[in-house]
Length: 89
Image (cartoon, rainbow, N blue to C red; front, side, top):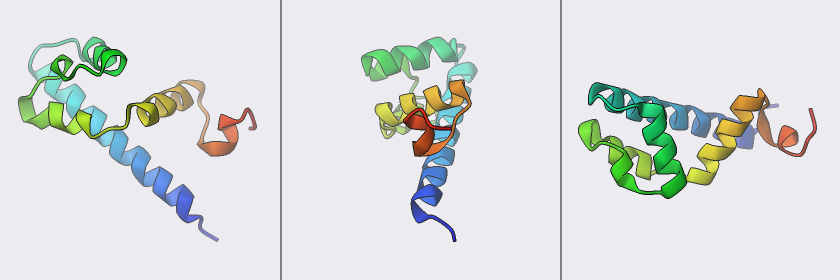
């Protein structure tokens, strides 16, 4: 049986990843350090950290920062989904 909630998380994860990659590419193209700029945006929510080139600023503003941070922590720890969020593996 296929879990619709899991499918939605997967779609959201892919959309999030695609958006961050597009923002990253725009920052590189404009000569910025993309990691520093994205971290600055996440910490401050100041959109001026992100270039307007290729609509990157508008794209990143549609991302939920909490969701992005949660996904980054999951990725860093190499864990998936909600069970792992509670310390279960």
